[in-house]
Amino acid sequence: MTPTVRDADQTAVEDLRETLRGTLIRPTDEDYDEARGVWNGMIDRHPALIVQCSGTTDVIVAVNFAREYDLEIAVRGGGHNVAGTAVCDNGIVIDLSAMRAVWIDPLARIARVQGGALWGDVDHEAQAHGLATPGGIVSHTGVAGLTLGGGIGWLMRKHGLTVDNLLSADMVTADGEFIRASEDEHSELFWALRGGGGNFGIVTSFEFALHPVGPTVLAGPVFWSTDDTAAALRFYRDFVRDAPDELGTVVRLGTIPPLSVVPEELHWRPAVAINACYAGPVEEGESVLRPLREHGTPLLDLVSPKPYVAHQSGLDSTVLHGWHYYWKSTDLPELSDDLIDVLVDHAFSTKSPRSYAVLFHLGGAVSRVPGDATAYTGRNAPHNININGVWRPDEDFAESETAWVRRFFDALKPYREGVYVNFLDVDDDTRRVREAYDEHTYQRLAEIKAEYDPNNVFHLNQNIEPAG
Image (cartoon, rainbow, N blue to C red; front, side, top):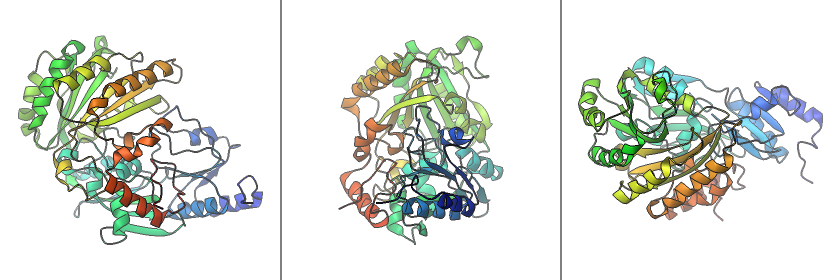
């Protein structure tokens, strides 16, 4: 019979503890509950072991131990994925969250980033040299998860997706082998890592190309009343159609968060916001954003020159660790009047003041990369929408917000055009993994999976089963 960790002699577990330079946590340890928690507070799983790795050798040791005792493996980078795949029941969590080092070569414009780093770590180091690589829109998002799924964010229209800036990845495979993937080494694997998610191994470090950005950018949201939502979205459709690549925009349909820069009388007021970041000279941005800021009668205009790192972390407090999150997402075409009507009809019918929908404008550099250059296949989509039901653990909104997300998502059915794999939610979204890839890309990924992980050891993710 295959041994399990419960069958393992305590000596074996103690030997594991002694071998690690990091920390081994078991259910009886005082810090177990904190260590098993992830960003989405809906996730409540109980692993048998948590290995908080200090470096690549710890990762190799943990993978080999899991294989010996047939333990299910969950891999934690930033722990930010909404589906909670960073933690499992009864198995082993290989936790890289202590591996957050970032090294910048400002002359070569290259960043080397450990697998547990957050985007705030990268921005902090790179912006000291006026450099950045495309990340997300929240600074406490993990680098690993966002990168492996594609990487959409403020800079993508100018500098491409995160995967378009990935130069190499060091990783540990299912058999405990350490390898490097790049255009010159394991090139098929490198292709798969750029959009195929965490299916192929545990990435312990990334190497990214950097670009001049900031350190001061013109950025921030403009808010309008919900009565103006349709007009604002129709204006936005025309405004972004010919927008320069330097302009990244995100539409938020929800309430105005109670930030210190927001007048108290506007806290939690439902509104439509168009949030912008101009990745070019501030003077140019002033001219580009003037029509947006002058449209209609805004409730509030927070566009101003500010540090790029401040803008990158500006939404952090609106998506806190431990809150409950339920998502549905899809790529969308250009905003027709009929599609705008659907958005208006559903966006503001939530019960929780924390729920919202967010619309990303793609295009630009994202669309100019050949479709088969990476495993990310949503390059022709003009927009992506993410419908987020959000509530605190002490609030009784689970039923209402889950229902709202599903109604809204169902209403978008005539317009849905695939999905961004990083935005897939919990169990009822697993069948949608194939929607994230065209048929040829999925088959190629499955064949690479069969080569590097034929037994599907790394299956707690947006899983691609091995071919054959």
